Length: 493
Image 1 (tube, helix red, strand yellow):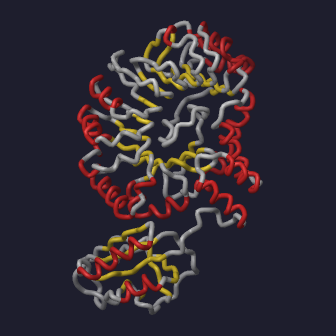
Image 2 (tube, helix red, strand yellow; image 1 turned 120 degrees about the vertical axis):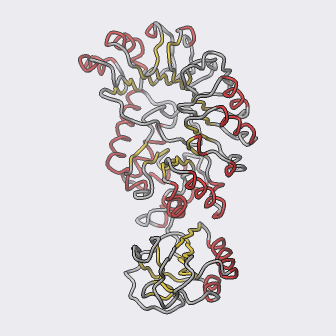
Image 3 (spheres, one colour; image 1 turned 45 degrees about the vertical axis):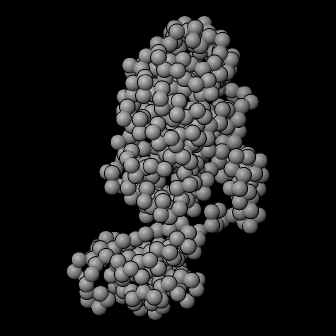
């Protein structure tokens, strides 16, 4: 049986911008639809007959139930006060259950249509069967680089080269010159191909590629509510989501859709504002491995601690927080598996005890674990706190400084970000330049006067100019060898 499918339905008939597609349904969906009133929308009937010629088929992914809350004027008269609701589903079985419930209850005036789009493959349509099979291996073994590298070799294109470059950057062992070449190649390829490779254009505002594929994206809540099937089809390895700001109603809609349509368990990283926390989030944190909570206050920390659901958390970022030491320590204690911790804020002091398990730290005080591998520090840090740290590979002093930095022994240092005078930068470059993969001196006054000298001294990349970048998107997995910055983010719109 063939139906016409309407999607991108506006909230009033007069403002509707419909596109019609043809799609074949299975018997179960056909039987469900047959129990509904003959549903009407414009010149199209969704009861098995066709009253308008559809556009050429171009199937969209996912399943949707299109409902009408209006109570009069259907199907023959133009409704005076229509209200269209579109529920999108990741699996057909959930759609069938809701469709049967709506039809049986009479809660809606009618079922306008069941959209049963052909599932878009999670691989690119241009790939051959062998390449798609290799891509399926990546999805089945997401923690392993080997399937990615085999896939890249088989693809043999710029896309495959990008996978290899990012896999190389995620591991230790590159020389500074090798790292410099790969970082530059990554930036050039993303600038040119990031949008089409993401397959999220029109769905996400930004994304982050990791080891060749999108793992994190910044999405509006309405996209997740209405188009999550399209999002996860386009980026099947996506598991970290940054939500744009919005009123509480959007948060409720996002959570309702996540629970109703069954895709919440795949989310491992979540970034949102602290004022969006509420009782509706109860039971939603247990599966998270990464959480970013902006503008947190003590009551938000207490809410999270009381939930008892932070036991799997490995990454905790608290930008612009206003937590006292007691609330902050309680929150840290509630997450014993922490590997990444960002708690930099003025006024914290040195009373915060940071667990030894933390390997990436952004702080303005407190203990620095002996094995920390990446450190961003706000304020003046004594040289004795850093001297001799063999594990430290990335150091960000953009908002701080270390006395006598050029005199310290940091044999593992590979990335350094500083904002200092020309003479201080020159001294630091002479001390560490031969081992650095990246020296970031953006926003240093007058630094361009010694640009050529720095490029000669530093074995890796040197960044000049103005830093206008935002923090990298939150991801759910910590990789010790990957860069602290320059991590594969792409703006999509």
